[in-house]
Image (cartoon, rainbow over all chains, first blue to last red; front, side, top):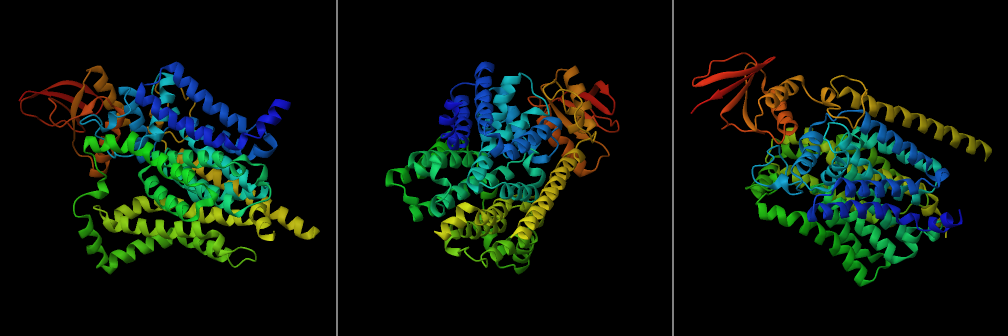
Length: 404
Length: 137
């Protein structure tokens, strides 16, 4: 028990370690497809790290319930959703069957589509398949649990209140809905974005309670945690690249008491990893993003000059953002909640909304169809960041900082 | 102070109830997406688990024909099926049957639907509503 007490000091770094194992898994695939033994080792370490978080059961029992529920849903139902099947799990299947992490971008192998999407999730699902030894339509999507837990562990470490944890989990369900468990990556992108913003906020605007948290007391642990979260975010989905750029720009402005070397590490290591592992092979294969097709500038200007198109995009954005953006703004009317403390999330919300607006302006697809099929997923990071900030502003870690 | 505490407790209980409803709604919406509309009754790690729940019957029939005739590629064609269903079945077939490829230039053609007459082609197998042709150029 004494050893456990000593170890518990290091529990805050566990989410970062889970992310690092997820990233190492990709590197292992690059070197050689993992044998069943190595695959079982990877999955065992990931499960072990998650279970370690539950040792302090009284503190984390809500997350244990969430984890069990996620296991029940991902292992209890087949995979039916469109993108989950034709993109994420199809890419995992291609990696598993060909035992090659770049098989999906090899000419003429998989013709299902969106082969340019990153391989963070497919690589882990393929490792799970290497462990089990067969492919079926159920268990590979359970790999998403290993992505769901690290941002939630970080959130719970910082909120430190049962009531707020309940509110956060309820809000998460209302915002992300079935995207949490159906094999889509959008909820995971939103959770990772939120976790990184929360880490920035907590480092800057909290003092009490977090003094014992080594992520915040030791710069190196904070840097490693941030790098691991950014690395996974980049490898999850193309949106991760845009979000990472926005967050890094903000980090460079605020520095968060990091040294220049640490800032350089946070800025470059995730990008180097992403470009070397994924972007370079993509460029070599000559595969480009479907949105970056010829005539992108012309499409943007054509739609900008068409008021109806702008109106359609704004309508769709408001339909999903109205409630939470109102709550987000009204929250600043509360006593002791200052806009200046939330410049990061506010800048993120504005810049990412603008970016999405430009992306929809540039779409080569039918605008209505593109918005109808994707906008509610694309806006998830914005919604979750706005909701998360409201919850964070209620937490003792923030209010006690203000009272000091 | 006491009243405030009680009200807060009630509020948290209410929010928890909303949470239970929301998470139940998520599981119901996921079950609704499956063909059998129920949770698995077999091990999630067993061979073939979730196929009947996740895929349209046409694609499972297609797999039987492909496996029986050991095809490595085939051309998929339809008669009297609407466009959205064609797109759906093709997309599901591409990923489910991988590494078997759907290739318009293949000499093997599988028709889903009514039997058409194809010049220079002979029927080599049939399974339920699917017919496999082999064609010579």
